Image 1 (cartoon, rainbow, N blue to C red):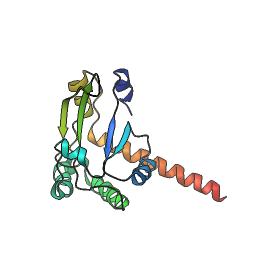
Image 2: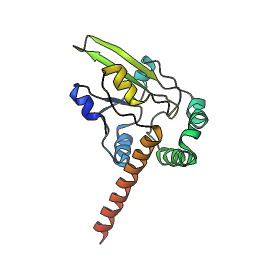
Image 3: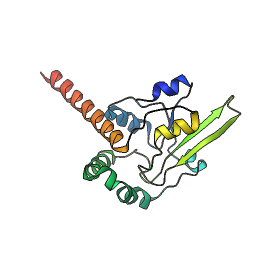
Length: 174
């Protein structure tokens, strides 16, 4: 990840709240193609999402990404979304309708936690650019990464991991 070293220099960590089961997330991470950028915590009841005021919406999840990002990503994004949706549509994958967010929590002690930055997604793909979050929340200057670049990175990492697994399987079969 191109900005993890910047976070580490500021002694910042990343916490990912998953609504899926442990076994599903393990499989997802295996197919991701790169290590997750932080610790993963499981909250299948979505209590964390509710406390943070994150919406859950079928319309926002199915319609809005295509309305908002078709021009940005093009038709290949439709195929990628369809591929990922079909591949991930298994028991234990969590709520497909739950929107996420990015929150910067600061603390001296665990009793003294304050939220200094909050970004609540209105639909999947409604991410605030990471370089803006780093600058606004932490004063870190980071290079901008466009959404198509981010998508290309994820697709390439996943395909590379899949190809490596196929190669390992062929070697075992020989």
